[in-house]
Every structure is written in C-alpha cells, then in structure tokens.
Length: 108
Length: 166
Image 1: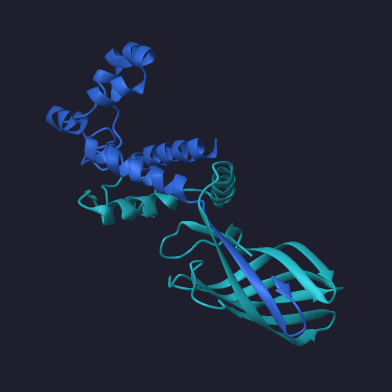
Image 2: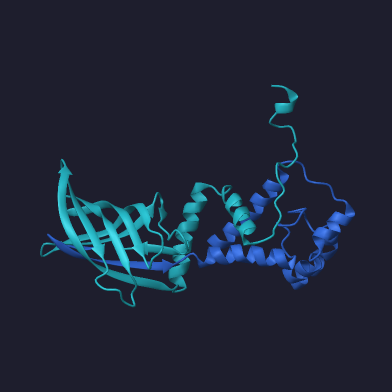
C-alpha cells in the first residue's frame, strides 16, 4: 500500500502456494481408486498382512512400488479373510498417524 | 457412571463412509484435518509458502487506485481508511480492497481488511494485516503487509489456493 493524504495505490500479489496440499489430497483419491491406499475401503487403514511380512524383504530391495502392487486388492482379501473390525477408536488413531506422516512429509 | 456410558468402553462406529465421489474425499479430508494440531497447521501454513517460493509458484499481481481518508483515532493511534478499486478491467484482473491501517508514531503498526476481492471470486472479509514494512517518504506512507486470518495467511475462499500479500 502506498497511501497519501487523499489518494493512494495498492498492489496485491496472490501466490498459488496451496498446490502441494491439493496434490497430497488428490494423491489420496487417486491411490484410493487404484487400490494402493485403503483409507476409503470398507475395512480402512488395515495393514497388508499376511502379505506384508513376506513382502518386507522385497520391499526393502525394490521400494514401496512392490508393496503397493501386491496390496492392490488388499481390501477384498481382508474381507474374504474375515478380518474383524478394529476396536473403536483404533481406526482414527491409525488415520491420525497416517495423516501425521502425510503432514510431516509436506513439512520436510 | 453406568457401564453403558463408560468413556473407555469400546463402541461400534457411528458411521461408515464410502468413497463414491469427490465430495466424499473432501468430507474425509476435512474430517481428518480436525485431528491436526493448531501448531502443526501453522507450520504447514509456513511450509506451503516457503515451498511455493522455492519452486517459484505461479502468482498474480493486481493493482488498484485508492481513496484515502484519515479517521478519528483513539488516543495515540491514528486510523487511516482506504478503499481501492482496479483502475480499469485489464489483463491483471479485477481487484477491490477496503480496510484501514493504524499509525503510531508515524509508523503503520497494523491494520485490517474489510473486503478483498479479485477476479470475481467470493470476497475475503475480516482479515488482519500483518505489517512487514512501513516507511514514510514525502508525505506518502509505504506499507508492505500480509493479510492474515487469525494466525494463518489468508487464502482465497473458493479455490483455497492463494496466499496474498499487499
């Protein structure tokens, strides 16, 4: 702002700084559709077990893409396996941890 | 407290949300955002700006002419009202800005925005001005400030993608 006695001038700079947050949210949606994020599944926020233990060495070697691909149908696999619901509150605790990690990765 | 109302007693889920469209994603994200501490939101707010600057994120600049009107102050603090409108519709886009600054000892120490509107988006109202720089030259006050909503930088309401400074 440049302000005189009667007149002045204003310059406003608008910066698109929200792209990183929007991208993170859109990535959640994309991963949900692709089956690589189970937060939107009927049995949300469950680990990929029993595959997870077997895949741990492969994941170390090849990175998370291996785990993502093998967990693609994890929700229906868990449903078929009859994995019971987590105790009340646990889903939100897991969600909170996951979100905290998401936020932390943005903050790094 | 009877057993049914024991806060530590496990209870079934109140609702089960299913992902059907973008609105469900927005609902989930909005719900989860309530679990983020205020201090982390402030860190996120700062981090988004730092990242955007580092990545040279896209920005838009709007300019407008202002009518300035000194108003009655309260004691040692002088109040200056301003009302700004884009001089013409141009490639820079339309912008309107209304508010006031507070002057103490010849320096602008704070201010408020009643309305900030650009490009036909819904106006942002009731913002505070976080003054970064204030100087006076030849009877002209030059102020650099960031519009804030509480402790966070103001972002456009509809798109929620902009942080503004004036």
